[in-house]
Structure formats: C-alpha cells, structure tokens
Image (cartoon, each protein chain N blue to C red):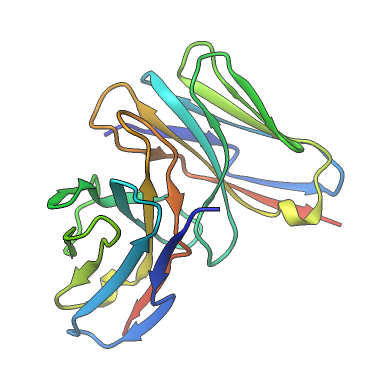
Length: 112
Length: 114
C-alpha cells in the first residue's frame, strides 16, 4: 500500500524554539493533512492542503504542499508547552481507493 | 469542532468476550472509518464505509466486523476478543464528496483484553 515517511520521529526542544517536520512519499498525493494527537485522545486536524505549492497558516503553525506533490512540511514557531504531543501527516494518493494514509508521527517534547 | 462520539472510552475485558465499540456522528457525513493504533504509533485503517449498507476492509487485516445500517452509526464488533486485540480504536468521518477530504476523529476507545 501507500506509505508516508515522516521525520523526525522525535524532537526534544526548548520552549520558544521553532519546530520543523516533514513527510515524503514515493507517489503523488492530492491532499495533505496535518494532525496533532494528545495522549489518550483522537487526532485533531490542524491544517489541510489541497493544491501543490499551497502554503497555509493556522496561528503559529504553517504547512506547505510540496510542488512535486510528493511532500509536505509543518512548521511551528515559538513553541509553547501545550505544543507537546504527536504530530501526524496524512494524505490521499492519486492512486488507490481514496484511503487516507498516515505517517509514523513526530513526537514533540518541550523542555521548559 | 466535529461531532463524532465513541463509546466506551475505556474497556477492559476477558478473553473470549464479544464486544462492540460504538461510533456516532451528527454531521450527516457519508464516509466513516475505523483505525487501529498502538500507543504512540501510526494509524492503520481497518474498515471504512462510503454510505449506508456499504462497508469495506482497510489495509490492516482485522478480525473485527462493522455494519452501516444508519448514516450516523458505524459500530465495530469483535466476536471473541483476544489479548492481541488490545489497542486503541479510532473512528472518523468525512463529509467531502468525491476524492479526498478532511477526516474528523472521535476520542477513541482503548480496549484491553486480559
């Protein structure tokens, strides 16, 4: 099946630092979604991207749909303690049966 | 925020028991999904439905079954639970017509089989 490679797997940063994570695929995607999941909860949608090159912000979060349509990144600026959690990229490939595929997740830990 | 609800949130049962995890959404979404997730790991699609009386198996093989008799309801059933079924089960829905679309997730049902 389709696979997404998400990196890094984990990040340990100081409060106030900026964060960057990305996802890549070997196939073309027509939708990229970024989710955040807190322990014991379901994923919450942060940003949705539908067009190649699209750059979208949600507060301190910014995500971009790569021009090649095979990658996407998420940036978090000026991190705060509540940013702690696991961030997942997800996408719909132009192949397959419209099933959302998830990356492996990036676990973000913030030292105060 | 999405209106999608899962019950129970937590369930601890013995081997061999039959269990049903409930999922309901009040948004009138046609598409509904079940994902299985081990703690801190990626999500794996186990079942999906594009409408009433439509169900399909996902990418990860699962011994569970689902039904979609009503648009708003998408329960998942395990006829005989085993310790290997211990996991978190996440239900999601999407209202977008055609390909793609944002999925909205419930809070999950964490199942422990002893």
